[in-house]
Image (tube, rainbow, N blue to C red; front, side, top):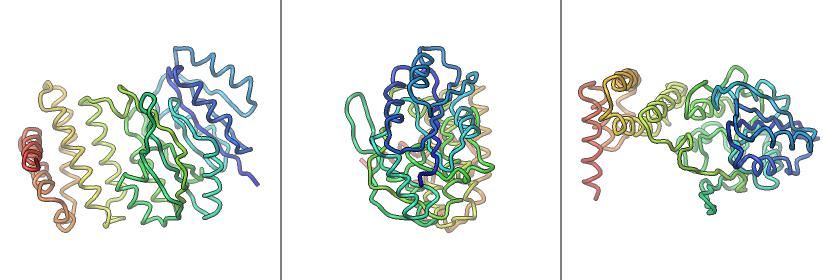
Length: 326
């Protein structure tokens, strides 16, 4: 038996890499795929590429919508998915041959709810490991711990095969960057077991100017907001993960402080509101969790909770700490 797997591929003006992406998906050896191309209002030559693949492969379906962003496109694909299992592929990325079969085998072998493969990073013409895995099955607690470490199991939506039922009542937050972070955590928190597959199966094409690597105040603010959403999802449920999640939350706040130190008053108002919300979250953290932070992060924690000159003092504390380490 080969359960139907829905592959959701959102795209917006990605004609440069789209054909290679679709070829890598359509030539997978898994025999029961539903391939959903979700066009998010593209104005380039993507539609000609869609037409050719829809003509050539009967299991490819095109869905079009006005430009609403990556999260909305993923959600559109979720709504249209008919498969018992589900995976995402970004339109500038690639799948290695056989990876969908490997993920499905891992899911079935261990009766897991999520299967995860290794990731390679492609920069120009150079491919290098980003996340390497060995074959194993993880219980929920261990899987969440690995996700918190964000080393071999990443927070990205892609590179994973899910049981579609996990998404019941869960959707990606529309109009937000780093939308993977809180949703991936909710899915892992719902799973009974996660199967790790010993295969570098997903190729992540890293480009300057991509959503995840754009440096701006808005990007830094949305990164921090996603980390806050993740923290709130697990607040009180996984206390052993709190110190690591807290460390990453503080680091995201430092990135926002660096980006926002010299901006205008309007942007500073938005940043101040976000940091006030962060302060409210941090003030609920137990003293025991704070004590497990490094001395430098404890100082930054105190600065955020004080609410006084947070941007300047966070950057000053971060720079001082870096200079001491040299």
